[in-house]
Image (tube, one colour):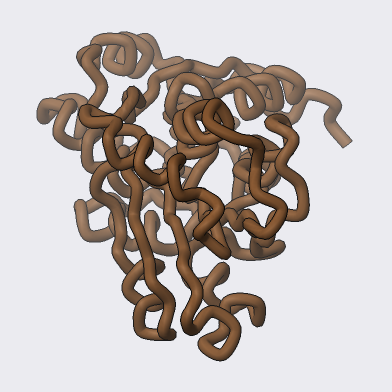
Length: 259
């Protein structure tokens, strides 16, 4: 087996800046070159009042659901500054990266899917079945916007749900120049995109030249929903990988790169 399966390949890493490290390091370890180009910029919520109110009543919740590592990073310091984590409050997360972020803050025993990492997979776990959550109060810590499926379904199952916006997402402030320069130089081989929202930002950033380059560049995505968004946006060179950074890396390594 080639010890450097990505030798000579440049892969654009588009996660928010604080989450690029693991995938970039894995690409480098496989001999490739990561080009860091976040498609989402993350910052604190414009209004922290909802987060402060949730912190004041944290012991009233049965479940605290964290949508992403960003939710952990922006919510937990405020929550734990007021009081220790309540012994009766069960944490839940959509993905394993969020589980690790919680563990880094000392929050263990997190409920999370182990295969597919999305709201549907979390809702399919027996601990969140209707008879288990009915009459209980759930806090969902998340960014601005996003899907309402998790909150709506838990409410349908009889839970009282509070959605707390603890961070905001915005389009990248940098222009597309780094991508265009790499494409023009013939040294941009693939993009790894882990967000439908980020993918829309990418298309909005690119002019006709950039979109033409993008059409000919393999796009690695770790979820079928992102692949569907890519098809809706007119893209065709889409490689659907398994979930998370490990899935993206496996697909990058297995890809039949042109000579």
